[in-house]
Image (cartoon, rainbow, N blue to C red; front, side, top):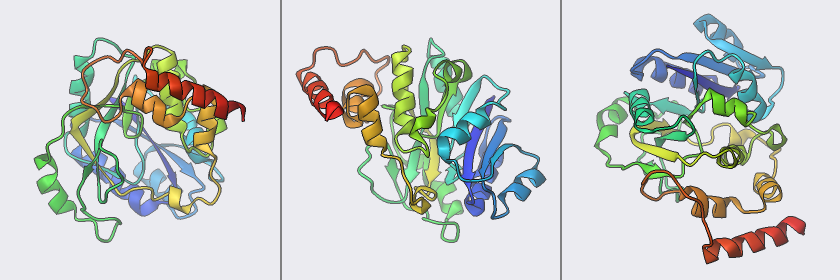
Amino acid sequence: MFSILIPSWNNLEFLKICIESILKNSSYSHQIIIHINEGTDGTAEWVKQMGLDFSFTVKNEGVCIALNQAAMLANHKYLVFINDDMYALPAWDQFLTDEIETLNTDCFMLSSTLIEPYETKNNCVIVADYGRGVRDFDEEKLLKEFSFFIKQNWSGSTWPPFVVHKKWWDMVDGFSEEFSPGMSADDDFAMKMWQKGCRNFKGAGASRVYHFVSKSIIRMQNHNYGRKQFLKKWGIKQTAFHKYYTLRGEEYKGELHGPGLNPGYLLQRVIGTILRLS
């Protein structure tokens, strides 16, 4: 069904949990492709032992290059980007497939709903603590309770785990490598999809994935200035893009129509232009 792309940077303990969850909890059989950044912690050997498809770079190239290289190995029409610090819950893929079948287009970004262990002021996620690391992860309790949470479909999908059609991935040239190692690259990808005509940025409330939260980002010392790059490239802040274009966090009501002549949006465009030129 899916070609699942997973960038991993010396994060073997979490990667094992991620892969095992996909193998155990998926409704369908999928192609799993790992991009190994460095792999000096045993990741390369383990991935080979598992017989998984993989791409490889000798140093940590970040998520943009990783995804683009991994996508070249994909043999299914739908690509899924998932982080290695995520645990896919039962039928996660079935619910995504069901949502795909309700759309009358193959131009979409469709995300699972994350369950995260602490509050990050993101109204698209479910907050419930089942562990923040490998050693305190309460898998048994999570599997018993994850379906009890009520969450409707929401608008504003741009982050992983998300699924897109490979045709559209290729059409927008994947992730923009000028955003390497990857801060704000998912929002840039979403904007590129918008520019090509995508109007479905949908979060599937029933598709659930547990997220341990930023287990690679916190180890990175050198970040790109993603928010500034996004502003310079598109002439608008990321926050305004999500408020006026993707309607992030609002109830999903179908295809989006753009901000039109909304006064708040027009003000943000003026502000964006000034900041872009400064």
